[in-house]
Image (cartoon, rainbow, N blue to C red):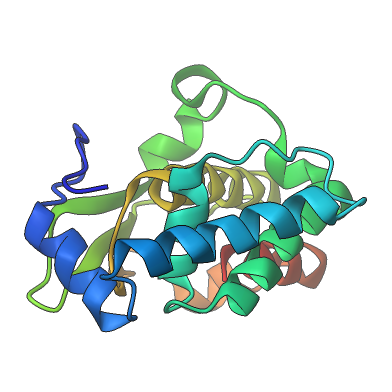
Length: 190
């Protein structure tokens, strides 16, 4: 994988090369071996129903785990487990129609360029001070859809997340968050 073509995220060959080098994945043979180990592991897991992960997805999983195949296994296992245990976050939906309401109240914008140290900058802006618990759940669904896209298409060393809460009473927002929603959301995201 040299350059990655993507209409939203600018990922140059230099970024791919530098990020791979950071984690000792710049040797194509070593990278292919790591992907193969992860691919074989997925096939042997009886609790993972969907086993047809692309090589690209497996590679980006290894990269997002700082080159650790073991951490990538844990990440994939957690993701698959949470899809079973917390299906409310993974309901198939149309962003433009079914999540339109939350898209008008909260923006999550990954910037196309990475930082100098190859991190993706993500801006989050909330415009509504009175998000309902249902809207917060929709926001979580939206973030996870975006995270799936980024997980499958991005090639970065990490994330810098900038949240603008100037138009929101943070205490009001926190009182609407529920542990049964926040805990699995964070487990999936991280």
